[in-house]
Image (cartoon, rainbow over all chains, first blue to last red; front, side, top):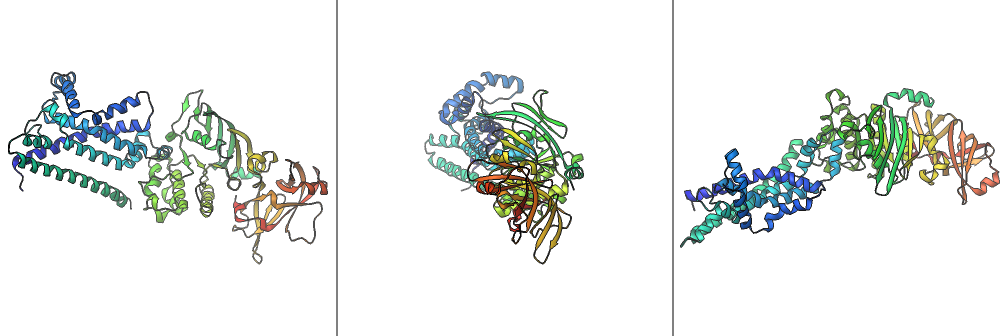
Length: 232
Length: 377
C-alpha cells in the first residue's frame, strides 16, 4: 500500500507538530519536575495541580482556553503578534502548543519520578568535590535521570501524535496546516464512503506509535551501553 | 622519639582545627567546641553523639545555628562575620560511610571528577600516583557496580584526594565493609597518611580504629565535646569509660621496633617504659608501631613473678583506681611515660591491698596482641 501525497503530508505534519511540541516543552518540564521533586514551598500543591490539569480536564476545555488566551484577539495572542509577530491561532504552531500542553503532565511526572529516585548524597559528594550547583546538575543529576527523561519524551511524543480535542478546538481542522493524523481520520469517518481511508490512516497511526516506542527503547539501551563503552 | 619531635617531623601534614558551633536537630542540641592540631584528628563517640552532624557542618553540607569553623587559619564559617563558604569552595575531601561513587561513571571518570574541578595551580596530588598508591590501575575502566566493597571505598578515597583537598574528612569509612575489607582499607589509609602527609579528620565509634590511626582524639557525647587530647592519654582515662566502653577498655602505646626473633617469630618493641614482646610484626627495625593493650589482658603483681609463662613484665606505678561498683575495678598505671589500664576483680584489689602511688608490675601475655591491636604509627 503506497502512501498518497495527501497521506504523506498528513504524516509529516503530525511528526513536525509532535517533535516541536516535545522540543519546546522539555526544558520547562525538566525545570518544573526538578522544583517539584526537590523543593518544599508555599503553593507547591497548587503548581502540582496546575501541571496535572490537562490530564483531567476535557481536552476541549483546554482547547477553548487556548483559543481565548492565544487567539488573535486574546490577551496573550494579541501581545505575541504585535511584539514578536508570532501567531498560534489556526496555524500548525498552535497545534504544537496544544499538543505540548496536553503532553506536559506526562512528561513532568516521568522526569520528576526519576529525580526523586536519585540518591541526593551523590549530589552532595559532587559539591564537596568542587562542583558548583549548575555543574552538579548537569554532570550528575541529569545523567542519572536519563531513564525518566527518555520515558517522559516518549510518552509526551505519543500523546502529541494522538492529540485531538484541544487541537481541533484551538486551531480547527485545516488540511495542510493543522490537520494532523487524528483529525484526518475523524474527517474521513464523517465523510460518506471514507471508511477505507480512515482505516488506512488508523493503521499508519498504529505503526507510527509502535515505531516511536521501539525507537525510544532502542535509544535508551544504546545510550547506556554507549556510556559504558565510551568509558571502557 | 618523644611526642614533640614527632610532631615537628610531621608538621607539614598537621591540621589546625578550631570549631565552636551550635546546631539544633529537632530536640537534639549540638554544642561542640574544641581545638585540635595534629596530622590525624579522631572524632570518637557512640551513635547519635553528633559525629556526622559535626562533620557535615565542617564540610558545609549542614549549617550551624551559629558559631565559627576555622581550618588552618582560614575561616570556613563564621555566623558573626557572615562567612559561610559553600562546600565546593571549602576544599575538604569527604569520604562517606557508603562509597557513593557516581554509578554512571567508570572508576577513572569518578577519580577525575574532582581533579578537573580543582584549580590548576592546586593540582599537586597526581592521578597516576593515587592510582598506583591505592592499587586501582586494573579497575579504571569498570563501573562501580562491578567493584567489591573495599575497592569501591578505595576509589571513593582516591576521588576525594584528587580533588586536592586541604584535609580529608572520613566518616566511618569502614562501617559498611566486612572485617577483611576493613583491614585492607585501613592499611591504605595508613599508607596515604604516610605517603601524602594529608591531614585527616577520622570519625568512628570504633576504639580500635581511632587508636590505630588518630594522634589527637575528640570525644563527643550527647552533642558535646567532653574530652580533647592525645589519643593515648584520652583513651586511657578512666572517667571516660562510659564513652570509650568497657569491653574495649585499654591503653595505647607508641613504640619503635627494636628487633625480631626469627626463631620464635616474635618482635620486640621498645617504648619509654621498657620493652614489649609480641608476635611477629611486619615492620623494619626502627619503624614506629602503635600497640593497643586491652585492660582485660593486663594482670598485676606486687613483686616480679618467677616461673611464669607471661613474657611481658613491666614495672610501673599505680596512679588511680576506678570502682564503678560491681565485682570489677580498673587500675591505671604509669609505666615510664606510658599509661596502662588493668581490669582486675575487687577481691584482688583487696587481697593485694592496692593503693595509689604503689610500685607494681603489669603482666601482659604476648599472645594477647593480635593483628588488630598493632598498627603502623
